[in-house]
Length: 254
Length: 254
Image 1 (cartoon, each protein chain N blue to C red):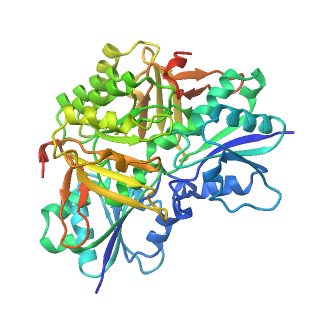
Image 2: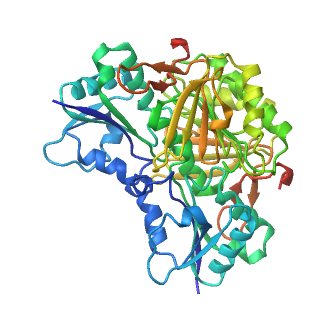
């Protein structure tokens, strides 16, 4: 009896942004684990067992998938975007570390995916064209002081910043605090992008600046991109401007 | 005559990590532009015109693709990984900004892809499971002092760090300098991963620590992942250890 666990990133939404490797893994699964709203996006085959769960029981979900793999099942753990970026892969390896010794022998494979900031960036141009960082405001596993310190240092380093999970249920005020930090550290004309549900039916993308931005626009499905000092707009007669960060630091501000 | 330009990320290597959207765009192209080693990976159809070029003429290549689109062709610009991360998308938008006014009306679409650090992370576990940054050591468009400052601040912020283009022809000494900075800023047992050509035939992945790491292992096809203070190993009886960064900052060092 040789089971396995494949941790799969299904991308930001549409099947056209899901890799063939992810689709194959899902097709070959006997048991599919994941947060309900991701699992609901999949077209499943007869005979596949679904194990849906809420989004706040990650270690339990990881343990259940590992136990299924250990018992010989072909388990798949579903993540939105890429499973390694603020998603289920870290929870699975944490569960392995804390779990019974035999879980370390389970055949675990991680299938990468298109993470949300890449889809958001693609939609508006190339804001991540130069050095950048990704910070999660989400979980309640991280003290606010640490988030604030990272934000300040990211501004000092002049990174483009992608903020994930800007308005989690556990910390709805986080995005307002984060904008307070950004407004102290960066000029008012810094480019800000709210990219919500990119690639899905309820997509909404707003390009604005730090002075005008309303942090309340960010909900749980939003990635917020904060430009560096080099991030610039290319205006167009029709449509919204392109946003990009040049490869050269000497090009300066547009 | 209505042309268009689609900037496509083909992922880190194998077709199974290329999105269906990228494959469709390539199939629909009349003209394909890109760095030779990427274009060579594609299976092309009769009638498609190839425009291969070296990897140091990005603005020229972008301009040629835009001119083709402007003349009514269906041009596709190929990038490895994701086109928005240290790749061709920023060069295209820079060419648009510098180019003739009518280029701003061209129908440009960016198709995201799996960028190299995500494939590298998936191969070894979940090192990007918590806040991280991506820094390119590559181009000669960025003064070394700026790279060094970002590295120092990234260490102070305790980000996991992904180093792209660690040993470009234009700056082969960059990775040695970068390790000099890292060794001043981080302890010797910091997890270091050299992930070369992940998903391709010549893949080589080495997990080590900052004290033992030999920067010369990084070539142009390598992404180097530098752990944060929380990044840890899960030892296994068989095979290399898993590397992951826990979601919680309180879990501490393994």
